[in-house]
Image (cartoon, rainbow over all chains, first blue to last red; front, side, top):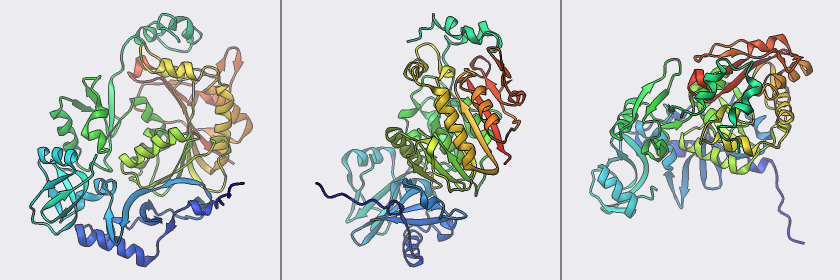
Length: 154
Length: 308
């Protein structure tokens, strides 16, 4: 007999993060990209393992927590070792509100980045995660460090 | 497979209910126009999207009466291969497919169940209309279809939906839904035309007892919505056995009322008699949409209020 894995229906539901954790994640977005915390005031922040999800704050969450869910909300931010990393999905949705650490690429630079996954790049931005933009469209997340831009955009 | 030469015989049973029947038959040989919905959750400036498409040779024109919908030329343009699609700025869909959500009138703060949600054209439309502020439970019974739904929710940047994998007819009680959409699995007759996927759907669902499934879904939807709440039932078929007779079944089983609704496309009242059997007179408040009058897939929509 194999070991039977216990499934709790509550366990499928992501956890609502503490105020402290919420503050940490939203402060990261505000400090890194200049996107004010108030933008997310109508949303809950939920957590599964190393992922944070954004989900509209319902009038009452409890009845929904009795459902066996597959996904809840939009994948927002990940914890990568000790860093927070915004997802491309979330940046495509909210990145247009950013006021800093945005890299505007030409179409040929974007093509090359998508093909080669890293580019030599010099820009007046802080090292760390950046928003990749091209012709007014936000494509997602990149990592700018040591004169290189790295991204795994498909 | 139903060949287009066999269509007149197949659809003959609807000769009395489909207006301009010969024109309808002729229309089945013509391709449908291409439409898409512009997703303003991700594209706050529609001009960026329209200009991007124009650079690729796509001419897009806003559709009167359908906010966020555009008619695209050329109609065989592969919109699914564009950057605009990949980035979640557009969702290609037939125009009549927008009608059930128009009837639903989703609003911020409402609990809404989309019972047969995959692949998500209507779920994402609900999210957009309610400005990503309704609480949407998007359900589908099949995992492969739910995967497509999850991908579309992600692509369109929707944060107000959760997904579940229940059989609709046994969806659990407990959430006080304000509104439920049942865009039911159906024979897909309204999609039928020469050389298009309508043929396949018609073929695939041919041996299933669809009216029994549809009745189960609609009754459950009604029982899930709170008193005073709204259920919208829709299909893309002409068949009264999958449309009015399903709603008639609900009206006999439960205290429900059909609500009249205004639509931006030409339509006809639901039938109140079929093959000699009289149906509830209020079924005339349901709406039938025909492809030769709408230049889109044939549809049926009923808006129903729970009285008790």
